[in-house]
Length: 125
Image (cartoon, rainbow, N blue to C red):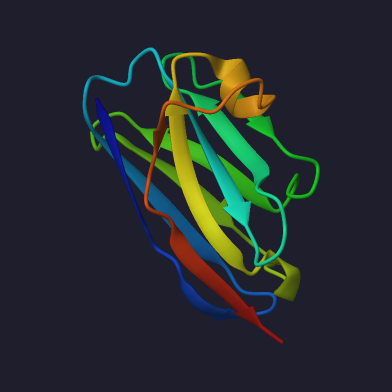
C-alpha cells in the first residue's frame, strides 16, 4: 500500500502562486509515477502533470504547460506542484495519484492504484 497526503492548497488571488505537496509513505515509490489531477465542480477530472520517481521524467497536460512545474524530493518522499500565474479557472480540488504504470497516470488507460484525499485550491479574481 502507498499512502498519499496532499497539502498546500488554499485561497489565492489571480496571478498568484501556490505550491502543492504530495507526501508518500508506505511502500517505496521508487518504481512509481506520481501525478497531479484536478476536478472542478461539474467537470471531469483532468490530468495536470506527472513525474517518474526514479528517472525524474516529467509529463504535462496542455492546459498547464508553462505555468505549473512538477518536481520531487527523494529525501522527503514528496512530489511538488508549483503553480504560477493562477487563474480563476484553476479553482478545483487537486489530488495526487501513484501507480507503477506511467500510462495509467499520464494517458488514463486505467484508474491509478493510489490516491490522496485532495486539497482545495480557490483562485479569486
